[in-house]
Image (cartoon, rainbow over all chains, first blue to last red; front, side, top):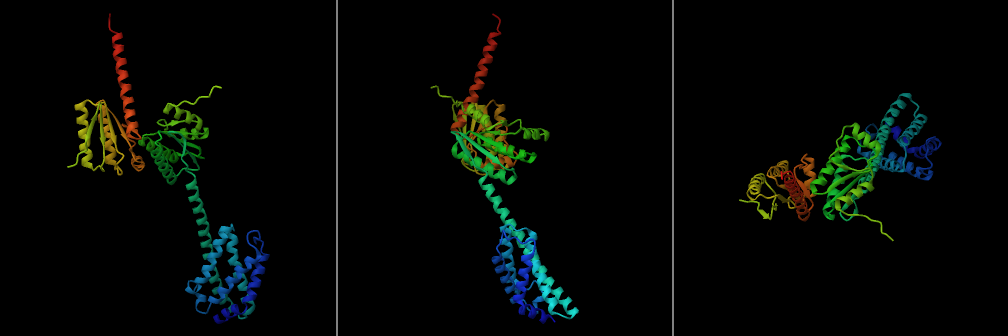
Amino acid sequence: MATEITKILKKRKSVILERWMKNQLTDETLREDLISNEELRAESEELIDILTKSLNETNLTDPDSSDFDHVIEILGGISLSRAKQGFSPRETGLYVMSLKETLLQILQEEVKDPADLIAATLNLSRLIDNFSIITFETFIKGREEVILRQTDEITEISTPVIRVWDGILALPIIGTLDSARTQVVMESLLTEIVESGSSVAILDISGVPTVDSLVAQHLLKTVSATRLMGAECVISGIRPEIAQTIVHLGIDLSDIVTKASLASALSFAFATLKVEVKKVAR
Amino acid sequence: MDRIPILRMGQFLLVTIQVDLYDRLALELEADLVKMVSKTGAKGILIDISAVSIVDSFMGRIIGNIGVMSKLLDAETVVVGMQPAVAITLVELGLPLKGVYTALNVEKGMDLLKSKVQIIEDDEIDAANDNEDHLPE
Protein backbone atom coordinates (compact mmCIF):
# COMPACT_ATOMS: atom_id res chain seq x y z
CA MET A 1 0.00 0.00 0.00
CA ALA A 2 2.67 2.44 1.10
CA THR A 3 4.72 1.44 -1.90
CA GLU A 4 1.96 2.86 -3.97
CA ILE A 5 2.21 6.37 -2.54
CA THR A 6 5.87 6.99 -3.19
CA LYS A 7 5.64 5.40 -6.60
CA ILE A 8 2.64 7.48 -7.52
CA LEU A 9 4.32 10.64 -6.33
CA LYS A 10 7.52 9.91 -8.22
CA LYS A 11 5.62 8.98 -11.37
CA ARG A 12 3.48 12.09 -11.38
CA LYS A 13 6.16 14.53 -10.28
CA SER A 14 5.64 16.86 -13.23
CA VAL A 15 1.87 16.82 -12.80
CA ILE A 16 2.31 17.73 -9.13
CA LEU A 17 4.49 20.67 -10.03
CA GLU A 18 2.03 21.94 -12.67
CA ARG A 19 -0.93 21.66 -10.34
CA TRP A 20 0.90 23.18 -7.41
CA MET A 21 2.00 26.11 -9.55
CA LYS A 22 -1.55 26.52 -10.82
CA ASN A 23 -2.84 26.49 -7.24
CA GLN A 24 -0.29 29.04 -6.16
CA LEU A 25 -0.82 31.33 -9.11
CA THR A 26 -4.59 31.34 -8.73
CA ASP A 27 -4.34 31.93 -5.00
CA GLU A 28 -5.39 35.38 -3.85
CA THR A 29 -2.43 35.78 -1.54
CA LEU A 30 0.12 35.46 -4.37
CA ARG A 31 2.68 38.23 -4.02
CA GLU A 32 3.83 38.99 -7.54
CA ASP A 33 5.39 42.19 -6.26
CA LEU A 34 7.80 40.30 -4.01
CA ILE A 35 8.71 37.25 -6.08
CA SER A 36 8.53 36.63 -9.83
CA ASN A 37 6.69 33.61 -11.28
CA GLU A 38 9.92 32.20 -12.66
CA GLU A 39 11.63 32.33 -9.28
CA LEU A 40 8.61 30.79 -7.61
CA ARG A 41 8.58 28.01 -10.17
CA ALA A 42 12.28 27.31 -9.74
CA GLU A 43 11.90 27.19 -5.98
CA SER A 44 8.91 24.87 -6.15
CA GLU A 45 10.51 22.58 -8.70
CA GLU A 46 13.61 22.17 -6.57
CA LEU A 47 11.54 21.41 -3.51
CA ILE A 48 9.40 18.76 -5.24
CA ASP A 49 12.48 17.25 -6.84
CA ILE A 50 14.26 16.81 -3.54
CA LEU A 51 11.11 15.71 -1.72
CA THR A 52 10.28 12.91 -4.17
CA LYS A 53 13.90 11.86 -4.20
CA SER A 54 14.25 11.53 -0.45
CA LEU A 55 10.83 10.01 0.09
CA ASN A 56 10.69 6.20 0.43
CA GLU A 57 8.58 3.49 2.08
CA THR A 58 10.29 3.50 5.45
CA ASN A 59 10.61 7.21 6.11
CA LEU A 60 7.11 8.09 4.96
CA THR A 61 5.80 7.46 8.48
CA ASP A 62 8.81 9.01 10.17
CA PRO A 63 9.05 12.79 9.63
CA ASP A 64 12.16 13.04 11.86
CA SER A 65 14.13 10.73 9.58
CA SER A 66 17.54 12.05 8.56
CA ASP A 67 16.59 11.37 4.91
CA PHE A 68 14.69 14.65 4.98
CA ASP A 69 17.64 16.76 6.09
CA HIS A 70 18.08 18.05 2.58
CA VAL A 71 14.38 18.91 2.23
CA ILE A 72 14.46 20.75 5.56
CA GLU A 73 17.55 22.64 4.48
CA ILE A 74 15.82 23.85 1.31
CA LEU A 75 12.64 24.75 3.20
CA GLY A 76 14.75 26.67 5.69
CA GLY A 77 16.44 28.57 2.90
CA ILE A 78 13.11 29.43 1.29
CA SER A 79 11.50 30.67 4.49
CA LEU A 80 14.60 32.66 5.53
CA SER A 81 14.66 34.44 2.18
CA ARG A 82 10.91 35.06 2.44
CA ALA A 83 11.28 36.55 5.91
CA LYS A 84 13.87 38.96 4.53
CA GLN A 85 11.78 39.78 1.44
CA GLY A 86 8.90 40.79 3.70
CA PHE A 87 6.37 38.00 3.21
CA SER A 88 3.76 37.64 5.92
CA PRO A 89 3.78 34.48 8.06
CA ARG A 90 0.49 33.47 6.51
CA GLU A 91 1.84 33.66 2.97
CA THR A 92 4.90 31.65 3.88
CA GLY A 93 2.81 29.03 5.68
CA LEU A 94 0.37 28.75 2.78
CA TYR A 95 3.24 27.99 0.41
CA VAL A 96 3.81 24.62 2.06
CA MET A 97 0.15 24.04 2.88
CA SER A 98 -0.78 24.38 -0.78
CA LEU A 99 1.68 21.61 -1.64
CA LYS A 100 -0.16 19.29 0.71
CA GLU A 101 -3.44 20.05 -0.99
CA THR A 102 -2.00 19.23 -4.39
CA LEU A 103 -0.44 15.99 -3.19
CA LEU A 104 -3.70 14.89 -1.61
CA GLN A 105 -5.60 15.64 -4.82
CA ILE A 106 -3.22 13.40 -6.76
CA LEU A 107 -3.59 10.61 -4.21
CA GLN A 108 -7.35 10.86 -4.44
CA GLU A 109 -7.18 10.32 -8.17
CA GLU A 110 -4.76 7.40 -8.00
CA VAL A 111 -5.79 5.40 -4.94
CA LYS A 112 -9.19 3.78 -5.36
CA ASP A 113 -9.57 1.81 -2.13
CA PRO A 114 -11.00 4.13 0.58
CA ALA A 115 -9.10 2.47 3.45
CA ASP A 116 -5.81 2.81 1.59
CA LEU A 117 -6.60 6.38 0.70
CA ILE A 118 -7.25 7.35 4.30
CA ALA A 119 -4.05 5.70 5.51
CA ALA A 120 -2.00 7.34 2.78
CA THR A 121 -3.61 10.73 3.37
CA LEU A 122 -2.88 10.57 7.09
CA ASN A 123 0.75 9.68 6.56
CA LEU A 124 1.28 12.31 3.93
CA SER A 125 -0.39 15.11 5.86
CA ARG A 126 1.59 14.28 8.99
CA LEU A 127 4.76 14.58 6.96
CA ILE A 128 3.84 17.84 5.24
CA ASP A 129 2.50 19.35 8.48
CA ASN A 130 5.86 18.68 10.04
CA PHE A 131 7.51 20.45 7.13
CA SER A 132 5.27 23.46 7.47
CA ILE A 133 6.06 23.73 11.18
CA ILE A 134 9.75 23.71 10.33
CA THR A 135 9.16 26.37 7.69
CA PHE A 136 7.39 28.46 10.26
CA GLU A 137 10.12 28.10 12.84
CA THR A 138 12.82 29.14 10.40
CA PHE A 139 10.65 32.00 9.19
CA ILE A 140 10.41 33.37 12.73
CA LYS A 141 14.12 32.80 13.25
CA GLY A 142 14.80 34.80 10.10
CA ARG A 143 12.63 37.64 11.32
CA GLU A 144 14.36 37.62 14.70
CA GLU A 145 17.73 37.81 13.01
CA VAL A 146 16.56 40.89 11.09
CA ILE A 147 15.33 42.50 14.32
CA LEU A 148 18.54 41.69 16.21
CA ARG A 149 20.69 43.13 13.46
CA GLN A 150 18.68 46.33 13.44
CA THR A 151 18.86 46.64 17.23
CA ASP A 152 22.62 46.30 17.11
CA GLU A 153 22.85 48.94 14.42
CA ILE A 154 20.67 51.34 16.39
CA THR A 155 22.74 50.90 19.54
CA GLU A 156 25.92 51.53 17.63
CA ILE A 157 24.88 54.69 15.86
CA SER A 158 22.77 56.17 18.63
CA THR A 159 25.39 57.27 21.13
CA PRO A 160 27.65 59.88 19.60
CA VAL A 161 29.64 62.00 22.05
CA ILE A 162 30.21 65.47 20.62
CA ARG A 163 32.92 67.90 21.66
CA VAL A 164 30.96 71.14 21.61
CA TRP A 165 33.69 73.35 23.02
CA ASP A 166 37.07 72.99 24.60
CA GLY A 167 36.14 71.26 27.84
CA ILE A 168 32.44 70.76 27.03
CA LEU A 169 30.93 67.50 25.80
CA ALA A 170 27.39 66.94 24.59
CA LEU A 171 25.58 63.64 24.31
CA PRO A 172 22.20 63.69 22.55
CA ILE A 173 20.21 60.61 23.50
CA ILE A 174 17.64 59.50 20.94
CA GLY A 175 15.26 56.64 21.66
CA THR A 176 14.34 54.77 24.79
CA LEU A 177 16.95 54.34 27.50
CA ASP A 178 17.19 50.79 28.79
CA SER A 179 19.85 49.23 30.99
CA ALA A 180 21.99 48.00 28.12
CA ARG A 181 21.93 51.38 26.37
CA THR A 182 22.65 53.30 29.56
CA GLN A 183 25.73 51.17 29.98
CA VAL A 184 26.91 52.02 26.45
CA VAL A 185 26.07 55.72 26.91
CA MET A 186 27.82 55.88 30.28
CA GLU A 187 30.93 54.11 29.06
CA SER A 188 31.35 56.19 25.93
CA LEU A 189 30.73 59.43 27.84
CA LEU A 190 33.20 58.63 30.63
CA THR A 191 35.87 57.47 28.20
CA GLU A 192 35.46 60.65 26.19
CA ILE A 193 35.69 62.76 29.36
CA VAL A 194 39.04 61.18 30.17
CA GLU A 195 40.31 61.52 26.60
CA SER A 196 39.29 65.12 26.11
CA GLY A 197 39.80 66.28 29.69
CA SER A 198 36.37 67.93 29.66
CA SER A 199 34.86 69.28 32.83
CA VAL A 200 31.24 69.72 31.72
CA ALA A 201 29.03 67.11 30.06
CA ILE A 202 25.59 67.92 28.66
CA LEU A 203 23.11 65.06 28.44
CA ASP A 204 20.38 66.06 26.01
CA ILE A 205 17.21 64.00 26.39
CA SER A 206 14.97 65.82 23.89
CA GLY A 207 14.99 62.63 21.80
CA VAL A 208 13.85 60.37 24.62
CA PRO A 209 10.12 59.72 24.08
CA THR A 210 9.20 58.81 27.64
CA VAL A 211 10.86 59.02 31.01
CA ASP A 212 9.72 56.50 33.60
CA SER A 213 11.29 55.83 36.98
CA LEU A 214 13.72 53.32 35.48
CA VAL A 215 14.95 55.75 32.82
CA ALA A 216 15.28 58.45 35.48
CA GLN A 217 17.34 56.10 37.60
CA HIS A 218 19.61 55.39 34.64
CA LEU A 219 20.04 59.13 34.11
CA LEU A 220 20.88 59.63 37.78
CA LYS A 221 23.48 56.87 37.56
CA THR A 222 25.12 58.49 34.56
CA VAL A 223 25.20 61.85 36.31
CA SER A 224 26.69 60.34 39.50
CA ALA A 225 29.37 58.52 37.51
CA THR A 226 30.27 61.72 35.66
CA ARG A 227 30.59 63.52 38.98
CA LEU A 228 32.84 60.81 40.35
CA MET A 229 35.11 61.39 37.38
CA GLY A 230 35.33 65.01 38.39
CA ALA A 231 33.11 66.56 35.73
CA GLU A 232 29.83 68.40 36.04
CA CYS A 233 26.82 66.86 34.29
CA VAL A 234 23.87 68.89 33.02
CA ILE A 235 20.65 67.36 31.73
CA SER A 236 19.01 69.40 28.98
CA GLY A 237 16.09 69.08 26.60
CA ILE A 238 13.44 68.35 29.19
CA ARG A 239 10.09 68.73 27.47
CA PRO A 240 7.06 69.97 29.43
CA GLU A 241 5.37 66.54 29.31
CA ILE A 242 8.51 64.93 30.68
CA ALA A 243 8.72 67.48 33.49
CA GLN A 244 5.12 66.59 34.35
CA THR A 245 5.82 62.86 34.32
CA ILE A 246 8.90 63.27 36.48
CA VAL A 247 6.97 65.17 39.13
CA HIS A 248 3.98 62.82 39.00
CA LEU A 249 6.27 59.84 39.47
CA GLY A 250 7.86 61.54 42.44
CA ILE A 251 11.39 61.35 41.06
CA ASP A 252 13.82 63.65 42.81
CA LEU A 253 16.13 65.34 40.31
CA SER A 254 16.92 68.28 42.58
CA ASP A 255 20.59 67.28 42.95
CA ILE A 256 21.07 67.57 39.21
CA VAL A 257 21.40 70.71 37.11
CA THR A 258 18.59 70.58 34.56
CA LYS A 259 17.99 72.98 31.68
CA ALA A 260 15.12 73.29 29.23
CA SER A 261 17.21 73.55 26.10
CA LEU A 262 20.67 72.66 24.88
CA ALA A 263 21.36 76.39 24.42
CA SER A 264 20.76 77.21 28.07
CA ALA A 265 22.80 74.17 29.12
CA LEU A 266 25.62 75.46 26.95
CA SER A 267 25.51 78.91 28.51
CA PHE A 268 25.57 77.25 31.94
CA ALA A 269 28.65 75.33 30.82
CA PHE A 270 30.27 78.58 29.64
CA ALA A 271 29.58 80.13 33.02
CA THR A 272 31.12 77.11 34.79
CA LEU A 273 34.24 77.34 32.64
CA LYS A 274 34.29 81.12 33.01
CA VAL A 275 34.10 81.54 29.25
CA GLU A 276 32.18 84.40 27.68
CA VAL A 277 30.72 84.54 24.19
CA LYS A 278 30.54 88.05 22.79
CA LYS A 279 29.27 89.66 19.63
CA VAL A 280 32.10 91.37 17.83
CA ALA A 281 31.53 95.11 17.54
CA ARG A 282 32.05 96.34 13.99
CA MET B 1 54.80 45.74 54.73
CA ASP B 2 53.44 48.22 52.20
CA ARG B 3 52.48 51.66 53.27
CA ILE B 4 51.02 54.39 51.14
CA PRO B 5 53.12 57.56 51.46
CA ILE B 6 51.41 60.80 52.43
CA LEU B 7 53.20 63.86 51.06
CA ARG B 8 52.85 67.31 52.52
CA MET B 9 52.55 70.20 50.08
CA GLY B 10 52.10 73.47 51.91
CA GLN B 11 48.73 73.33 53.56
CA PHE B 12 47.62 70.29 51.56
CA LEU B 13 48.32 66.59 51.80
CA LEU B 14 48.95 64.58 48.66
CA VAL B 15 48.29 60.85 48.43
CA THR B 16 48.87 58.90 45.24
CA ILE B 17 47.69 55.32 45.32
CA GLN B 18 49.93 53.37 42.96
CA VAL B 19 48.87 49.85 43.88
CA ASP B 20 45.54 48.11 44.05
CA LEU B 21 44.26 48.71 47.56
CA TYR B 22 43.53 45.71 49.67
CA ASP B 23 41.41 46.07 52.77
CA ARG B 24 44.11 46.39 55.41
CA LEU B 25 46.13 48.87 53.37
CA ALA B 26 43.03 51.00 52.94
CA LEU B 27 42.26 50.92 56.67
CA GLU B 28 45.84 51.94 57.47
CA LEU B 29 45.68 54.75 54.93
CA GLU B 30 42.48 56.01 56.56
CA ALA B 31 44.10 56.02 60.03
CA ASP B 32 47.38 57.55 58.80
CA LEU B 33 45.59 60.29 56.89
CA VAL B 34 43.41 61.35 59.79
CA LYS B 35 46.43 61.41 62.13
CA MET B 36 48.41 63.42 59.59
CA VAL B 37 45.61 65.96 59.14
CA SER B 38 45.36 66.57 62.85
CA LYS B 39 49.16 66.73 63.24
CA THR B 40 49.81 69.15 60.39
CA GLY B 41 46.57 71.07 60.44
CA ALA B 42 46.24 70.56 56.68
CA LYS B 43 43.40 72.34 54.92
CA GLY B 44 42.94 69.88 52.11
CA ILE B 45 43.63 66.30 51.01
CA LEU B 46 44.17 65.28 47.40
CA ILE B 47 43.88 61.58 46.65
CA ASP B 48 45.01 60.42 43.22
CA ILE B 49 43.44 57.09 42.29
CA SER B 50 44.28 57.10 38.57
CA ALA B 51 46.25 53.85 38.95
CA VAL B 52 43.43 52.05 40.76
CA SER B 53 41.56 49.77 38.39
CA ILE B 54 39.57 47.65 40.84
CA VAL B 55 37.29 48.83 43.62
CA ASP B 56 34.79 47.11 45.85
CA SER B 57 32.16 48.45 48.20
CA PHE B 58 34.64 48.43 51.10
CA MET B 59 37.11 50.61 49.20
CA GLY B 60 34.31 52.95 48.21
CA ARG B 61 33.24 53.27 51.82
CA ILE B 62 36.79 53.95 52.98
CA ILE B 63 37.15 56.79 50.49
CA GLY B 64 33.79 58.19 51.58
CA ASN B 65 34.84 57.85 55.24
CA ILE B 66 38.10 59.69 54.64
CA GLY B 67 36.07 62.54 53.16
CA VAL B 68 33.71 62.76 56.12
CA MET B 69 36.48 62.35 58.75
CA SER B 70 38.69 65.05 57.28
CA LYS B 71 35.67 67.32 56.98
CA LEU B 72 35.32 66.95 60.75
CA LEU B 73 38.95 68.05 61.06
CA ASP B 74 38.24 71.03 58.78
CA ALA B 75 39.95 69.71 55.66
CA GLU B 76 38.41 69.24 52.22
CA THR B 77 38.98 66.03 50.26
CA VAL B 78 39.35 65.85 46.49
CA VAL B 79 39.57 62.52 44.69
CA VAL B 80 41.16 62.82 41.26
CA GLY B 81 41.76 60.70 38.17
CA MET B 82 39.05 58.10 38.69
CA GLN B 83 38.86 55.67 35.79
CA PRO B 84 35.56 55.24 33.95
CA ALA B 85 35.20 51.59 34.95
CA VAL B 86 35.77 52.51 38.60
CA ALA B 87 33.18 55.29 38.43
CA ILE B 88 30.61 52.95 36.90
CA THR B 89 31.32 50.31 39.52
CA LEU B 90 30.92 52.76 42.40
CA VAL B 91 27.61 54.04 40.98
CA GLU B 92 26.33 50.50 40.47
CA LEU B 93 27.30 49.74 44.08
CA GLY B 94 25.22 52.74 45.14
CA LEU B 95 28.20 54.72 46.46
CA PRO B 96 28.18 58.16 44.84
CA LEU B 97 30.82 59.43 47.39
CA LYS B 98 28.74 62.35 48.61
CA GLY B 99 31.34 63.65 51.08
CA VAL B 100 34.21 64.18 48.65
CA TYR B 101 34.89 66.48 45.73
CA THR B 102 36.14 65.00 42.49
CA ALA B 103 38.33 66.32 39.69
CA LEU B 104 39.60 64.96 36.43
CA ASN B 105 43.33 65.21 37.13
CA VAL B 106 45.79 66.37 39.79
CA GLU B 107 46.11 69.85 38.27
CA LYS B 108 42.37 70.50 38.29
CA GLY B 109 42.11 68.91 41.73
CA MET B 110 44.72 71.32 43.12
CA ASP B 111 42.88 74.30 41.59
CA LEU B 112 39.65 73.07 43.15
CA LEU B 113 41.26 72.62 46.59
CA LYS B 114 42.84 76.07 46.42
CA SER B 115 39.53 77.68 45.48
CA LYS B 116 37.73 75.84 48.30
CA VAL B 117 40.31 76.87 50.88
CA GLN B 118 40.30 80.43 49.52
CA ILE B 119 36.54 80.69 49.97
CA ILE B 120 36.80 79.45 53.55
CA GLU B 121 39.59 81.90 54.38
CA ASP B 122 37.67 84.79 52.84
CA ASP B 123 34.69 83.86 54.98
CA GLU B 124 36.85 83.83 58.10
CA ILE B 125 38.34 87.21 57.30
CA ASP B 126 34.87 88.58 56.69
CA ALA B 127 33.68 87.11 59.96
CA ALA B 128 36.65 88.65 61.77
CA ASN B 129 35.96 92.01 60.18
CA ASP B 130 32.30 91.74 61.16
CA ASN B 131 33.33 91.10 64.75
CA GLU B 132 35.57 94.16 64.74
CA ASP B 133 32.71 96.28 63.43
CA HIS B 134 30.59 95.27 66.37
CA LEU B 135 33.24 96.15 68.93
CA PRO B 136 32.20 99.09 71.13
CA GLU B 137 34.32 102.19 70.49
